Amino acid sequence: MSIKSNIEYIRELKAAAAQKTGRNGEDVLLVAVTKLHSPEEINEAIDAGITDIGENKVQEIMDKYEKVKPVRWHLIGHLQTNKVKYIIDKVAMIHSVDSLHLAKEIEKRAAQHDLTMDILIQVNSAEEESKFGISTEETDQLISDISQECPHIRIKGLMCIAPFEEDPDDAREYFAEVKKIYDKYAAMDMERVDFQYLSMGMTNDFEVAIEEGSNLIRVGTAIFGYRDYRSEEK
Ligand SMILES: *Cc1c(COP(=O)(O)O)cnc(C)c1O
Image (cartoon, rainbow, N blue to C red; front, side):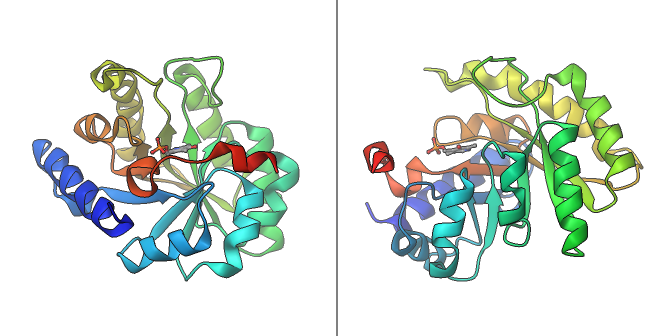
C-alpha cells in the first residue's frame, strides 16, 4: 500500500466515524504523525493532501524542518522546558502542555518572538503512571493559571493519549471523560481560552475517539507503516 492510498483509506474511515456523530469527515483534522520517517516520505504525504504533521521530538523537527515542504507542524510529545526555544517559531501548536512551569517557558519564548502560541492541555484521564499529562481534577487549575499568567498563549483545547487496549472500545470511557471537560470550556467565555481542538485518537483507536467527539486525530502507523525504532540508536 502506498502512503497516498493509506491516507485515502483513513479519510474514508474518519468520515464514516464522524457521520455516526452527525459530523462530516472534514470536521475531523488528520494530523499525520511522522516521527522516525524521512522527509521524502513526509513530502509524499503532503503531496497526497496532508496539511498538518506531528512530531514527538524537538530534535526530529530540527532535523527535518528545512527538508519538508510547507506544512503545519505539531509538537505532540513531551516537551522539556530547555528545548522550547528551538521550536517556538516552527510549530503551529503544542499538544503536550501539562504544567504551569512549561507554559511559562512557552510564554517567555513566545513573547521574545512576538507571537502567540496555540497549545493544548494534555490530560491523562486514565491516570497511567507511564504517561505524561495531568489528571482530570487538575485541569481547571492549570487552565485558569495559564490563562491568567501567559498572555502569549492561547489555549485551544485538550489532548489525550488513551491506554493501549486490545479492544479499542475499552478506551471509550477515557475519551468520554476528556470530552466532558472539553465541552465545558468550549461553552465558556474565558480570556485566551478558545477551545477548538480535541486531539484524541491514534492508529489503534481513532474511530472510537471520533465517535466519542474527537476532532483531531494523530495517525502515524496506518499512514507510514511500522516505525523502525532501531534506527534511533545510531
Ligand atoms: C506516535 C504517536 C502517535 C501516532 O501513533 P500511531 O499508533 O503510529 O498512529 C500519536 N500521538 C502521539 C503523542 C504519538 O507519540
